[in-house]
Length: 219
Ligand SMILES: Cc1cc2nc3c(=O)[nH]c(=O)nc-3n(C[C@H](O)[C@H](O)[C@H](O)COP(=O)(O)O)c2cc1C
Image (cartoon, rainbow, N blue to C red; front, side, top):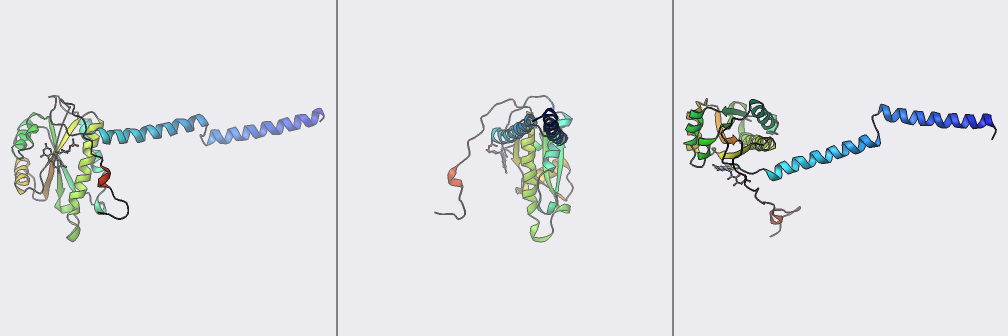
């Protein structure tokens, strides 16, 4: 190969290298970035699974208040839940006044932790937004999905919380409605008691193979 041909080959090789590098630069793809984004996805997946696995009911709280920003984040997580026909048939009552928290503590004998908690969020179903007819009771699943999201958000932000049940107990629903002056369209599903944890209970191991069937259930 003479000098002129060598130079042509070299130019072609250089041109190919420049084009390949240009395409990767424009599409933002470099092997380092790929690895970094894959690692980020794996970490995000593990963080979500760890948050679910380490959540446990917390019933003792520090005296300190829960920040407004955290309350909003919990409410945003709650309202991100799926609902039948996307009805979002709910309403959330945020309670941080001592006298109201104390009144709520009297409503459910298993919710005495309210007396020392700085915050509760009462998750209600709203009859005005529910599916009409046979699908009405889907509100219970909708509001329960919101509740679990709220509990997980609380845990992710270093808060402790416990679900205390109201509906379908008529007595508890009535007591909560009176304590919060709820309008007739609101049905309290539960009271979520929240605060900074003053205890560190271990999450319960609940995974059981026998609770799972594949395709058809056998005896
Ligand atoms: C529908 C429902 C009602 C509950 N009611 C109460 C309650 O009134 N008081 C209470 O201390 N815990 C209550 N809990 C919390 C459960 O006791 C708790 O979730 C369960 O023991 C499992 O423990 P874990 O949340 O730590 O996994 C309730 C939970 C659910 C889902």
